[in-house]
Each structure stands twice: as structure tokens, then as C-alpha cells.
Amino acid sequence: MLIIMKHLFKKIDILSSVVDTRLDTQYRIGMRVVKTVASMTLCLLISLLSGGSVSLSISAVSALVTLRATQGETVRTGVFRVLGTIIGGILGTLTVMIGLYLPYYSDGLYVIVIPLMFLLDLYLCNLLKMQDSCQISCVVIIIVAARVDLATTVGSAFIFTLLRIRDTLIGVVAATVLNILPYNIAEFLRIERRKRSDENC
Image (cartoon, rainbow, N blue to C red):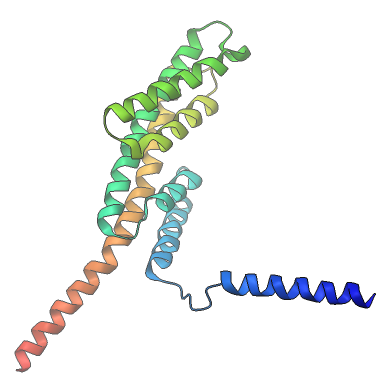
């Protein structure tokens, strides 16, 4: 029993040292974390104020994946996310159109059609040198193709696509504004302080 206890304590000690080397005890919450939480909170508020007409998940996820370390990266990511959403929305609507007129689509033929749309989507994104749009574009295809009831019309698929683009834009704008705004406020305050110190000299 004593041998087992010694062995157990030795394993616990090894595990403890591994955990200690993996933990960053000096970490403090930075501005990027604050801006990420703030942008997602803004999406929550917009969804709440819209009475739920804005898709909370899509706008919040858009904000989350758009926010980057720098303003330039955030704007670039946002632009590619919007472009990818538009391409995916168009191809998703096209998928629904095909499903409305193709026999046996809803009986399992969609297993062939949707991947072919992914292939076309990835081809277009790479052709247009928009590799950063590939993932979101494919996500939008599956969202539109899976969520729109094929018994309805192409018009409903198109409206659904426009709503998803709107929701994505809300997230992108929230992330971009909250990434740029603190910097601009800080820059404005710095300029004002410099003016005051120049006036006092």
C-alpha cells in the first residue's frame, strides 16, 4: 500500500509540474479580449432590440471571427467575410433552386448536389483570390440549403439569404467599430493632451 501511495504522489507531482509549465500566471485580460466580448455583447443587444429578427448566432459568430489584433486585419477579415457570405448565399440559393426542380433531391440526391456546390464555391473563391472567404462561404451554403424548406419558393430562399447577409454585416460592423473606436478615442485624447501642453508652454 505504501508503494502504491508513493507511486501515486510521484505521478501527482509530475502532473503538477507539467500543469505549472503550461499555465501563464502572468496573463492579464487585454484589450482584444475586451473588444471581442464587447462586440458580441453589442450583437446580443441588437438581436434583443430587433425582437429576435436578427440571428444572434450568425451575427455573434461573425463578430467573433472578424475581430483581429489590428484594425487593418479586422477590416480585411470583415470584407472577406461579407464577400464570402454573398458568394455562399448566391450558391446556397442556387442549391435550393436545383432542389426545387431536380427529382429525388430531397430523397438523398442532395448528398451529391451540395458537395458539388462546395466544389464550385471553393473554385470561385480561389479563382477570385479570396481564400479567406472559403470557409464562411461554404458555411452559408449549408445554412441556406439546409434551413430553407424545399416545398417553398426560390424567393423565400433568396430572402433567407439576404437576412443571413444582413446578420453577418451586423457582426462585422460591430467588430470593426469596436476595434477602431478605442484607438481613435485614445488618439484624439493624446492629440488634445499635446495641444494643451503646447498651449501651457
